[in-house]
Image 1 (cartoon, rainbow, N blue to C red):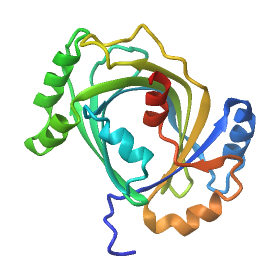
Image 2: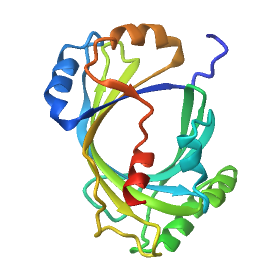
Image 3: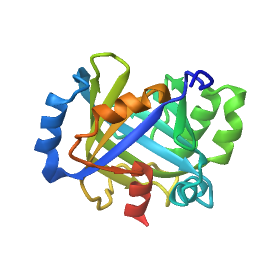
Image 4: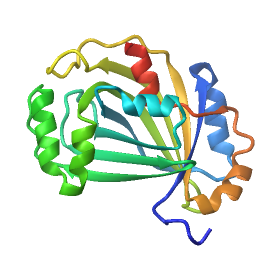
Length: 225
């Protein structure tokens, strides 16, 4: 495992209906990972970008082993985009990594065009091929996230619930008022370095949820199609 890039991480996702929230809370409290709250819950907001042909969407659906995803993320109660970070997520087989570019001083009113220009001017030249390729705003989603860290400080667990989705495909104006119908569910994600795969697999074997290739982007797009 020494040849693995230390920036790589594995992500294992589990999905359950909201009715199982008590069982999930109980597992976190008694987990062999000895989890504790890393910091306070936050509301996570994302605008996902794709191509005209929805390449990121179809690559995920088709299970393409090497794929890329671009999104703008900010935190807090504001649905209107504010200071945050542009994120480039890449995955190859079971490994993935994420690059982030902090965006400050954002003042774009409610225009997708102005937001795109602001994001483009905030990234280094090496990002521009991705920003230009994944140029179409598709959806805005938001959810409530809880953060946990293992006692060994090598494993992170996040729990997402209270999902909302807003279609962004039909106008240059950022839609923050017309919410799509969305099935409510809970996603628990375990994140760790690939070297820890065997250890983590043993520690989470008793989790009361089903492992899944679930993607919040896929779920969000499906809710507006």
